[in-house]
Length: 143
Image (cartoon, rainbow, N blue to C red; front, side):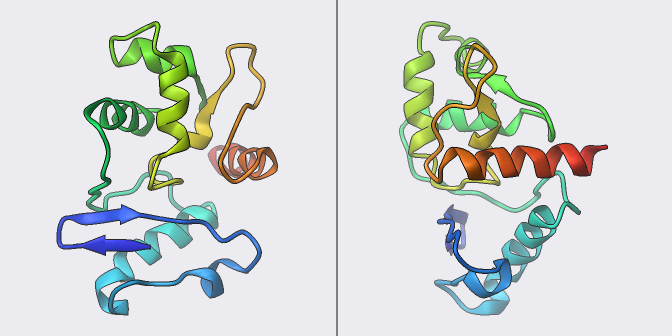
């Protein structure tokens, strides 16, 4: 996790360790505590929205996509084409996929909620099994 006074800049997932043990902080624990608390609440199905400052680095297009991702309600999905339409560029669905791929703040900017136009799970940096687990976690907590 990388954060500064502007907000959270980057979050990398380590998928081989329990949540609490795998969180590595680049700043003092007190500075990062709000991020840690909300991430753990999300992973345990107790949080559906984040209210922490974010400061990801990216292009203007990537920021448009990431903002659209944050508008996808908890427990729901959207297609790459729907995201492209949402940002006013309906032909940019492949570029939307690339912006998802370089999303520096997964979970909080929920790129796992984006699926293919046929309703199937498609690419996820951490693997389709993790994407499925995140969607299942949200579905279970939402019901």
